[in-house]
Length: 78
Image (cartoon, rainbow, N blue to C red):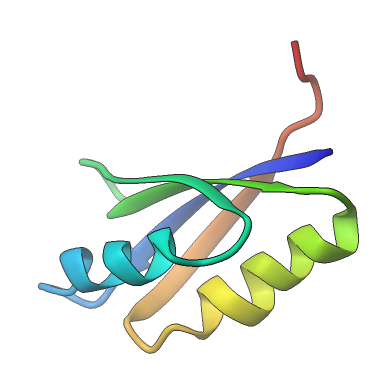
């Protein structure tokens, strides 16, 4: 399995709409609004690296309200 945390900045006032869409995305295990420089943090879980890439790049980054993302791939799973 491949895992990643995706930190997301969205258009002002769009956090709830973005969160609802992101939570429905296949591969998204958890998604939460947070404080700080990013608006939403997402935990993605996929069976292979290509699927992980598609979930982040082709799905999450394509939502119109998403302005910026930072993806942190998990290297050590306990």
